[in-house]
Length: 379
Ligand SMILES: NC(=O)c1ccc[n+]([C@@H]2O[C@H](COP(=O)([O-])OP(=O)(O)OC[C@H]3O[C@@H](n4cnc5c(N)ncnc54)[C@H](O)[C@@H]3O)[C@@H](O)[C@H]2O)c1
Image (tube, rainbow, N blue to C red; front, side, top):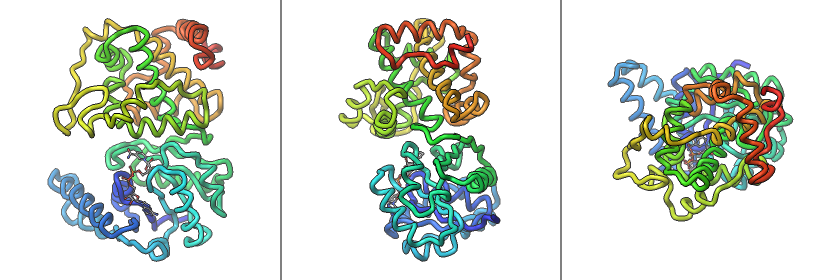
């Protein structure tokens, strides 16, 4: 397929960015939302972003104008998908809403059109099965903000054809992103399966070891190679996103996550993180603000329980044929900003020590901590 025409459904936080990167790569883009005012706002944001690139001399004024002119904002669905070859769906993360959108889309778009969902947590297979073309439905998980983040997880559903997977991967490369294939439609895909459970685990470490969050965050940043602490990263991501991902993942698989009540509590109290001025930490204004972490503080925490948690989930993905170690490391590097490979940290600590830690935790706190067979075999 010679892919030229993309329709993006939903012009919010992610949709406008995906439209921009697609137009930048030369695609003809239609951006669709339910009201003109949302489209106006999205086009304004795209214009602002392109102008910034022009002022930084990353692109010329003519290139900026050209990219902008390739994006057509359209409210009418029929008109919006008339020439589409691929529709990228970026509507809110509510299954009932997505199902309604796909039912309407399936009736409106020509039968050969590919549907790619930017869902972070919802099952692709379930979305696909609501359409008459499950072999043409796939997950395409961009990270926020799409203009900057290099990683895109590509997730085929149970019935997705290999052609559609190949077309989607090549589209991702064409927009200058790195596709990582999540070979099975598993809860959390790859990055959220590594990240979200670790936030909960960090809450357990704080509670059980009675240490301060800045101590844990320092260890995560300075010893595990994260770009920031895990609580800091949670605040940056937003407790609404983490809470939603937790609910979806836990509902589908009790083994993936051991929910700690703190996340729900912060969510209920609207302490969503940076965006509301308070999450795990307090922020004085809505500008991005770093928490003071240090190597000295890092020495006060042995992060083995956190390493054990992320490694056990990584191993699960390999054992269950959703990924392999090389691809997992790439996803963790590009999606979480991890500077040090997870399995390298594990080898430094000793895989046997990690397995022993997991067995100890399993004895004390239950089955959730049982080590994955891959880790046992790597000792
Ligand atoms: N925000 C993130 O950090 C992030 C990261 C990765 C993936 N995602 C996923 O991307 C999707 C969208 O998230 P978002 O943060 O951009 O949401 P958002 O609320 O910012 O934007 C969603 C947009 O969809 C529009 N919409 C609703 N119904 C529609 C319809 N029938 N047709 C067209 N547009 C419709 C809304 O008006 C809104 O403008 C979700 O599945 C989310 O899980 C979000």
